[in-house]
Image (cartoon, rainbow, N blue to C red; front, side):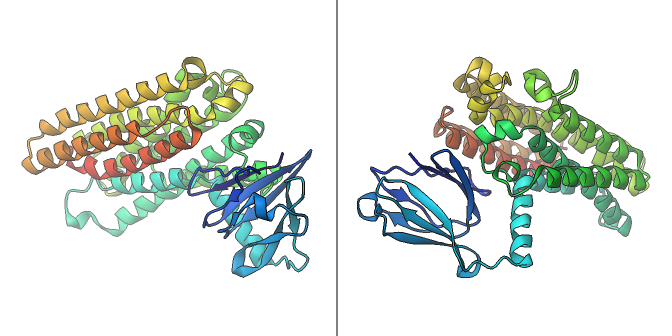
Length: 401
């Protein structure tokens, strides 16, 4: 039996070929697929495909359907045998150009860097960098230089954390995430190591050249936690230890970025480094939220984690129990945010923070009701929804005064 798995970097859905029902593909962009035909494995890439192949009509040795890629060029031919097997064959008139190769590598790097996580880092740093500002005059060249000094090394450290995790977990990802570049063959292991090395040098060098102690400490701690989370060394590989995995996520997204960027911008503007209610709330709230994200991230990966002995919370206690616990923790965090917001001495801040957090909590509950914890696609979709809530929170933290 031949199976087709198709994945997009913008969604987590998979399509399966079933001879009795036909093979359905929908309009999509930059999808990756792999074909298992007997004992052989054929990776390929679908950039634009919107066909419905009826098995009763199309499964003949003489029938072929095209799959198109960049600029309508035929790169693969989809054929069907009388045995109901799906065959992928390269087109004879394919011209491999450096533009196509570069575009393919860029697509692979985008998947490699986990765009949703990188976007969260960019939004978070940009938002937190505004907290120390007290007047329009603070929008000076010193501020924008300070923002870039924080943004570049933390973004490199974020991509490094995703990359080193994929580099170490190739065997697990063959089960859980076969679309990732190192598994699909888009990147070789050598290319993966080269990217990780370049990111390591860039993030640490930029932090050192900033001459900012808060930023250097923050980036260094972020880098060390990201390394300890993935690498297989004594007392490390924290991702296999549920409590340490939760601490790692909290450290990466809460305990490091918020205070490091806040005090770095104060230092760049020549202001005294003082604590504020907003950065205190942001550090605690995002640490809790990040720890929950770490637990939710593991829910759809139970099969591969169990096979390779990674005793995550979901493997130990079950997907439904972990999902319910994570939901309750987030609702309590939003409840605490409502209380903190209601205690503000500014009326506008009080109104916006209370209404905003109540709305986000309501949206969270509605989305949770439609999520099936035992379905990998459903939980992955819920995980991506949590990032949208995270983006909204970076707006609300400015009203927690």
